[in-house]
Structures are given as C-alpha cells and as structure tokens.
Image (cartoon, rainbow, N blue to C red; front, side, top):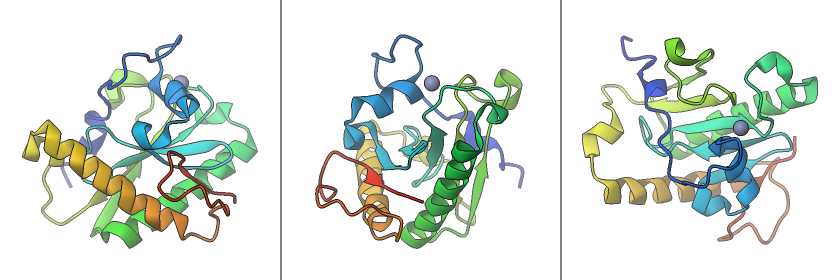
Length: 184
Ligand SMILES: [Zn+2]
C-alpha cells in the first residue's frame, strides 16, 4: 500500500519537441491524428485514452479530456459523463486484456505537492497492478524494450477496445493510424 501513489510521479517525459503553442502535449497529440504513433488507443466525443510514455506498469494509460482545463468543475456535464464512461470502458478493457490483480485510478491535482508534471490539463491515470509488482520502467531500463512493450500493449488494448459494444463501425480501424472510436 505504501506505493499507491507512486505511479503518478513518473507520469510523462516529453517525446515530441513540437508540443505546440501552449506547450501542452495533451492538446497537441490528439490534433496530430497520427494516433498509433502518438499512442492514443481510443477516443470518445470529449476524451481520449493515451498510453503513458513511461509506464509504471504495462497498460498504464491516461484518460484525458480534449479541453485544456486544470479543474474538473471547468468541464460541462456532457464532458464529465463522457470521461466517466471512457474511464469505465478503459478499466474494463484493461481487465480483459491484461488480467491484473487490481488497479489504481486517480489524478494529481494542484501541481508539485500532488506529484504531477502536467497540472494545467487534467487527466486520470489508470494503472494495472499485480501482486508484488515493481516499477516496470526502472525494472527494465532499456529504451528499445520499452518501445516494443508499448507497441505490444497498444495493439492488445486496441484489439479489445475494438470489440466493445460502443466501438463505432469503422472498417478503417483495423491496422490503421486511427484510435478506436467509442460512442456512449
Ligand atoms: Zn492541454
């Protein structure tokens, strides 16, 4: 239990120097529409699911509204509901795909004291946990292995997201650069 908040601490290291005018990768990545490369695995009307670049565990993702806001009460009801639905679908997808012993789902709010690195754009971490797991990133410490693991995790989550009842009929989905579209 002492490590329950550790996953949030190593949440993001910039991989794309073109972070955009406001310097926020959570704004730029979904606008690039190169979802596989950006590791956006699923999208809904108001939010998207992004694999964490430096996962605490394989399957560590973030559920992020498109809106660049720092507070949950800045989102309207539609966006809040959509975020909850996408989070629920993400948790279910991770359960099916990776069969963890448990999960952490949570947020860093308010900057340094909470341990977050991108405080200006709210996002919810979902981290699968296994009994006795150790920090995956520090355990492997090998960039090539990390990239392969991320691509493998992306494909596995993608395939299960695609089978969800909310997944939009889209023949272009398979093997494409587009994330799975979910409609709640
Ligand atoms: Zn942003």
